[in-house]
Image (cartoon, rainbow, N blue to C red; front, side, top):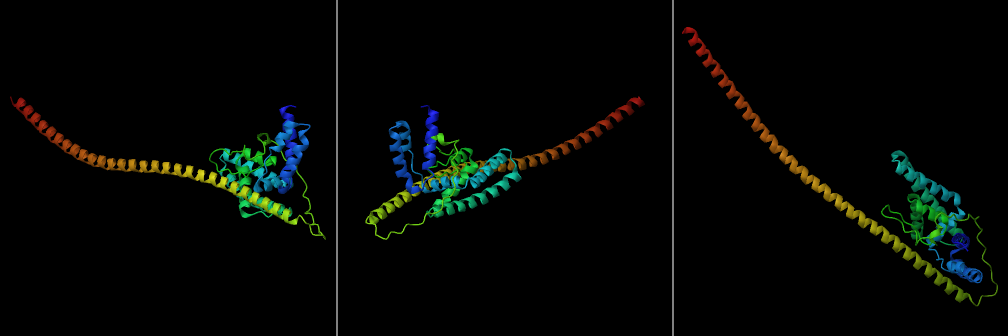
Length: 304
């Protein structure tokens, strides 16, 4: 089997898995890998290695599949914004920036609603990560491709300083350039009423609680990673700010020195002009005396 066909089949499997409910991902992945093992060991191994997405990444993946049109608008604004930046189109850039903020906020709100329809309450922290991921897709073309794939395993964050690590944020490196399969929204299933109490209820409740703890830990890890990236960007920008301020202080010191030197030169110029005026007066007096003496000599010559 060629590497291309492996990638195609892996994407087909991953596209289905990452479109499932978050709680179903791990058991469905493991079951699918077991099914594939007998016929295609390599593909089974790669399916088994697919990582469970964080809650924020799952919400974005869900949004890409269920609200493809809105996500397409976000990515279109991103492409226009990057083009305006490249062409230094100031007015257009400001208008697109305002549109970007409004659109990401609106799409994030829609993402929360879609997740709620599937029974998942999106926290403020997760919502912030979803919005940060959409913003990253606008600012960075590679991030846009990662979002379009619908195979995110972690939220994205683009600060404008350094490259975004997409290798750890997507299910597999070849995901860039692929597009998730759109899906129709499914109605929320009605809960089944059990007349006879389920003897496994306590075990199921504990399993669900442990799953929620695992999801919360993943969200905490993702939030810490986002914080670390933001803190690193702040430190770098602060260092650059100190460097620029140092250069400004040096220029101010040099300007003060030049202004002081200019005052000294003005004073020396004034003294030189006074000296020149005195010298010109002395030259005029000497010229007059010489002319008088010459005239006297001429008279004496004429008398003799």
